[in-house]
Length: 260
Length: 260
Image 1 (cartoon, each protein chain N blue to C red):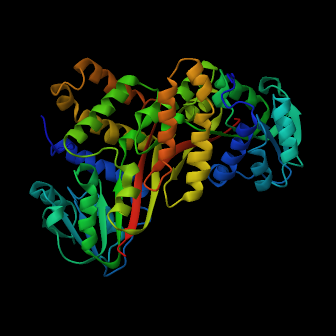
Image 2: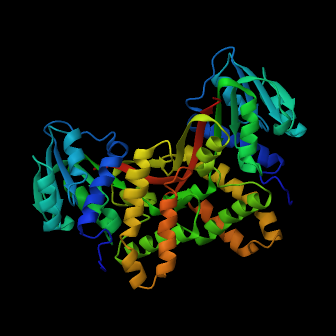
Image 3: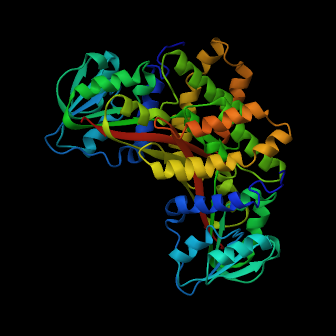
């Protein structure tokens, strides 16, 4: 299957996005809790993988979650109750909110700074935005492998070809500043997995990162970015890092800013 | 100047190693404090850049600091008081200690696991080891630059040619486990610098990492690893990341283990 949206809309992919949040929830969501009664917008909620954690940490907030995909929203609705789900394009959103939350969305947009500038107009003065993104250029592992790196590079390339940026994490500070947010603060949130952390090895290295890479194999080979043989070696080497002597490291970035 | 020890022994380099510790001290040393009266060995203290922080955080401990270089030890003695400094090769050390501390040393050794196994023999049963290393493969930055990456790769290559491993951080878990330590735990310590953190931009991005890369320029060009033009572009692009819209990220690893 050759899709434009690099994460696809298939069943296993939906499971993976859920697995990712369940494994990383503490790391990514720590520090994010909205007051009771506050109006919170999640822009690009997808299948609700993050929505469920937002709700759990801010049970008294009024959460509106928006996505452009009706199919994703159906799954999100089945997953989380008490949320006002709406189907809309991010650039068509209106309303006023106290807080906006955006997770793993900007990486897919051709104009992330423009998206941020539009989201800013939805905030009351003094309202805050929280943005979480990964950066595939932050991934490194033991044992090292040129083939595995080539496979990861294919994912980065495909996301770029689809108009996104899989290396966006490192750009969050200039993006939020450029969009006119104030008090911009960005912190790295680094996931590190080795044999002493079997839950992360399985939940992140294997079922999140490596599964995500594997998900674009057919497309990468079909487009001639890599040979099938080299792809297979790369994926095998990523799995190799989950063994007893392997390690894996990846850095997410969490940014906050406020509307002046 | 073409030197085997990649960090050199020159004046600016000595200052850099001091700057590095002063900037990163909180990040690297947090969580390391030894009880009063405990016998602590710092193996490979160099010019004492870390020794000063060890002493500050464990004022009641008996600290023995060892290095193979008499010149480095002279500087360390001038920098820190109350420490028992000794000149010796790591593999010739004897004695018994409650705790061993090793920071930015294994990266220079051809046989780091063997060194760890020897250090283990210096610990009483139940005694602990703390190891801190960087990993130059963890560095990424904005704006991205192939030239800057090529310059960093030269540093990695030179350290490998000298028998070391500038990518050793990711290997700490298997190394300590392989050397026979128990309760091995490794945590990433990620440095992230952007315009909102000017002290880190100056102290880490510019005066630590970029200065370290710049320090091997002459050797890298002399050995034909890179052209002077490309080197200059790479260094300029590293400095470019210190500007208002630039960012820089690097991950250290801190490992602990105990003698069974």
